[in-house]
Amino acid sequence: MKMTREQRYRRIEQAEPGEIAKLEAQISECPWRQSYHIQPITGLLNDPNGFAYYQGYYHLFYQWFPLGTEHGMKYWYHTRSKNLVNWENVGIGIEPGDTYDSHGAYSGSAIEKEGKLHLLYTGNTRDEAWVRHPYQCLAIMDERGSVTKLNYPVISSVPPGYTEHFRDPKVWQQGETYYCVIGAQRTDETGCTVMYRSTDLRKWEFLGEIRTQLTSFGYMWECPDYMEMDEKGVLIFSPQGIEAAGDHYQNIFQSGYLIGEPLNLQTREFNHGEFQELDRGFDFYAPQTMQDTDGRRILVGWMGLPDLEYPTDDSGWAHCLTIPRQLSLREGKLIQQPVAEMEQLRKQEEGTHIHATIDNEVRSFAGMDGIAYELKCEISHVDAEMVGIEFRANGAERTVIQYDCVQQKVVLDRTLSGAELAEQNGTIRSCTLTAEVIKFHLFVDASSVEIFVNDGEEVFTSRIFPSRESVDIRFFAHGGKADFEATQWDY
Image: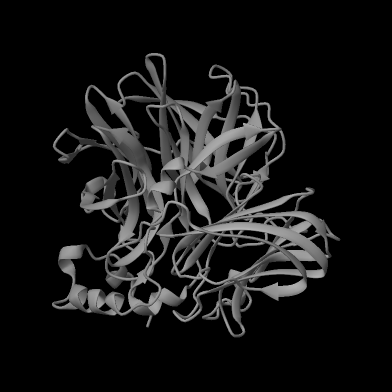
């Protein structure tokens, strides 16, 4: 049953007696709880926030509504890790409910300054008429992990020309100056990104919009993130309201990027190429990046989408985060690859290995199965119309990643993955890929899969909801033969 507005905007201390215990009991019975992905202890998780390295830990916060699976009163929940793969729950990072975040601590980012981690976020408020008034707020975490909120907003109003959809500040430092980008909606209901600058993170000067060639591209841009790599500028954002076209944008909301010359901080001119999707799967949104002490640019995304229902909702929880991915540029594309630390989760050093020629058949191999694992597969000498892998399979239930050699397309099919999803969630996604050798690198968990194709040239991220009995892995070639070499590691 849907919650009322009053129920959704309760703080955690306003929970009914026994309400949280009931949620925890439901969750403990859920067959789709993840093994190695960040997931909420109760309720709903969405955008990753405040991703940073500080005091020997990677810190990662996420949007959290503890009392249900609908979007309501948002907290920042705090997790941390020494190695990017073993995460510990710290607890609530930012608690909403004050004057400038009365209806939620919305998304934002983090930066270290003077030995403390500064958390810049959007405070969501509503007036008596339920009109939204956003504020950009600052909270400061000290070395002991104690978080203190400033009692005033650091950006207190929306500039003329923009609506109340004005949120998700992402901060960085250049020289002695701090800059931040904010996702915005113009009053003509088109999306864009605006910029501010500051010398102290407390007083911010509005500079104006980042000038892109996308003057009318969706109705809102969420979660912008600007970075520079290999002397190029990269702007990541999540536009809403893009129409599907061919294989592109075939889920309700997308995340993508522009690559160009470095952003001119004086004129805000950004000369860039075409918008490209970050992920070809179904459930990927609101990514955030950070740069670690080794100079790596690391991305984490929300493995979910707004305005969709998922089978775990009935069990009292929703959504998770992706594994961390290292970014690089290759031939005008942003490449995503799993961070090397993921190998630390492998339960056996060598893994289970197969090398076989598969000729117009579907084959499985002893010792290759499971619920949570990593699987690397290289398919070569392809003389077939279709090659691929069925996984989390049992009888008719299966999820399929395949390469259509005739159309030169990678296809992910979750039509028979398990618990049925609503039509708007989608069942088949594909993209064009021209290659003689196909590499599929899968990270499978109890209710998700992340597939890195040809060393991160494309990525397919999706939630799936198979039965616990669906553990088979099957390799296939149709209309001919191909050589398969694969290794699986249990997680």
